Length: 618
Image 1 (cartoon, rainbow, N blue to C red):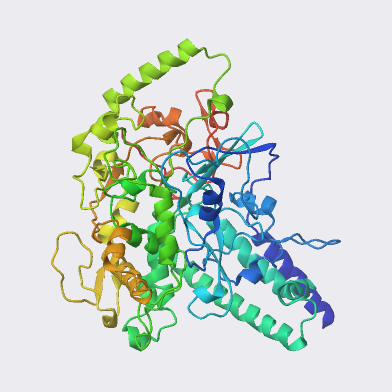
Image 2: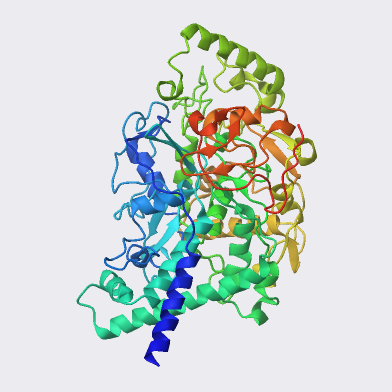
């Protein structure tokens, strides 16, 4: 009997090991370089680790830093899951406990005012977790039961690339993470903690201390069992629903559908069906519209944001992102405060302020700025000392710049506008591109939107807001057309467009926080960017200015083109598929390796669906 149980345990462990994700190998880095993008080291570190009130990972903070890697070690204790070298294999960027960090460039503010962010809710980075990981203090959660761990916007919007032993890091750039592989590793770590001999005791010592009581140990064990069972139950459900899901892989995420599933499925799951009037799983949408993590410098001053130019108000945009990465919210119990949440709206606003900077068109004394310029996070400048060929003379470089500028003005300007760094200043003086100043003297850049049928890339992401429907309970009292631009409110309906429902929920969540913290009307208006909560669904993609575009590969909204060389080829000649690995986008293109062009990394197939190749049109 004992032999059979032992054999079953061994087989189970072997099967668990077979489930472990395949990861790129670690690489040796000689130096780290943060590019100078107008943030001080303190501002950068705060942005990397300030909580938005999220609980993205389904374990308490104390558990995450105590878990071991999902590997089997015969003669030694496995290393911890949080080890930087291990997490970097998922694409996460190592980060120290405190600022300053890195070497060479970065860490200086040259334009605009410093941001006096709140330190009351800031927990720092005491365990040296990667960029984008944040501790949400227990007092800022809804249940107040313990510190949680979640992602900040830096987790998805901080880029890096490795070139000749240097790790080049770019604030506001697209992340190169594979979140699905990371989630798999986390669940396996929990399973190993439960089933592998001696591992739970080590885990309990780290979480509870070696002086823990037997009763504390048993409570922790019961909590581990319950959490793992709940995770596996959801995993079984998703296996049934995600038959046609598209693998996201490195550098991509179906963010819109994941946000919808979090808010309109997961946040309803604990609500009795009779209260809702429907099964929350009716709202589930498979993840089939992955996009490249977008770069976000300059974005605060656009009239519309997101790839599909669908939203304008900054607090709704950012608080919605926080809800999407599992900030807590009450939309399921009408007997308690509806729309109460763990979203830290003040911190979310301060993150936006750090990104935006001061008004580009006004000085600090509100006088006209003679030379407008971005004063928040600035696009990264090409590090010529790293990338330029020593064989390229100054004369040749100047000639190439001139030729490139001429080509841009001929072929790109009509959609992407004048170059931001155009020496004539035309970008800032192009009257047709800027809205009139509002009461606060703020003007916004009018991005060009092109119908998806004209762009020729896949329609999946552009269709999400236009076609996805969700069921909502009547007690939420959402107008059937909440936040749709230019429409008079309609009575609540049992089913409505997902984008409209999400905008309505997020607006009420922000308003609930404003009311709780007695934020005056003028301050609310400023935090809202002096703009209405207005969304649109045009089935189109926007053409933003191309400042810093060199640092944002892979290209197009779905990351389907590996490098700039390929992007500038006729569409039919671009690579049909390519690998996104740890060192860079690897793609043989007419004898060139994109890795040698210093591009970021990932691991996905070209195209919007795992079972078909992309057909691109010029």
